[in-house]
Image (cartoon, rainbow, N blue to C red; front, side):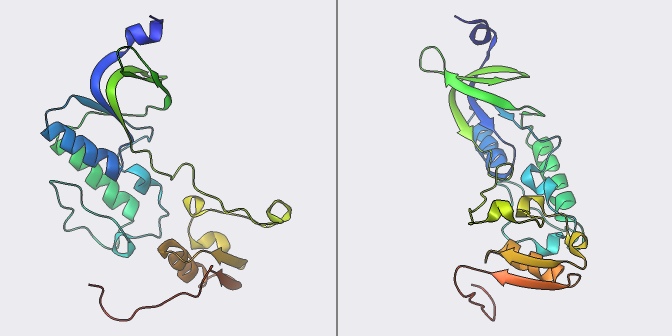
Length: 212
């Protein structure tokens, strides 16, 4: 038996990530009485939401669902979503006594003894029966490949690195994509940029009236 395996703490389940998926998993594991630990590499509660751009206020958020067992109510729609949701996640962890360890960067998951998994990090190791990967894609966003991309001398940004509209004042900006984030960026940037171009793979379809 190697030293890391010998020193690993035994736990039934390791949850990697403390965003919406990770906290929801931990909630249900706790309700079922399953011993678990949540490892999160972020410095504080909030998952990927804590890194959203300041101009994304809570009232403009698309796709934020309340966590199981505790609704998010009464939030100021004019406050940055990073603050509102960060505080909500922190309160959720405290209310349900979720065991979140941070900052912890998981470096490897290997086969252990007796069919268990060895979860390794610089902060320690855990021997588990199962692992829930709830890391999301924020830290490793998908960049589509375009011919000549490496020759373009302008600034290239992914939504994950969007700093807010002020960084584009007076610039000519191309927004690529037809999702909600692209539309939000376009609306903001168009107010300060010298010019904007919106590129989508298919013509956008706009809907009027309430969604049901």
